[in-house]
Length: 210
Image: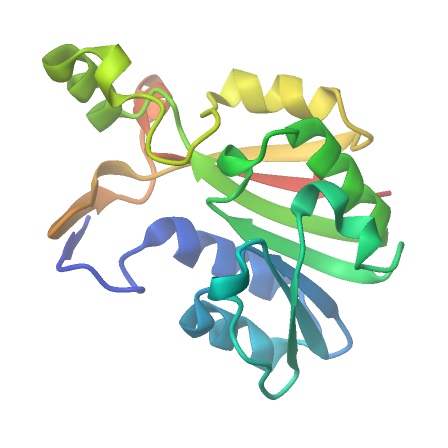
């Protein structure tokens, strides 16, 4: 069990993506980070690859270029306007797709920019996470969803159906985090028994381009 005060090391949705990234990245890799406004996270990615292109939708959040990292203001739904097709080895996105209006289009654009053999690593909140269900009961569902800027949230079944509408044919879905993973204190298990996976906090999915 992990517990403590908020820190990047306790944000397991990111830690899990980073660990998966390290399994696939090489010093020759060109990496695309979608939603790249947190420089601390980008600095964790950059030592392992040749270069990173960071895509950020909001102009005020676009960081300054550094080392092997170049940032561009762009919309995930129209990636091919700024990213060359078949130019990316690995794409990574943490907590972004739930903000995108046209999620099928966004994933198909991602497919276009990935090289054959490329992989996309994506995480998103689980709509049926335990704390959300409790909040629905206490405050009423209409008062707690959607959260902030979220266009939608997904269940594992939703993610499966979403991917089946795209050009990706091979994928893997990984349920993450059971417990308290927000606010002033974190206390959670990295994974949950199968009978409780419906209530995990996050869904991580890996998309493979043949």
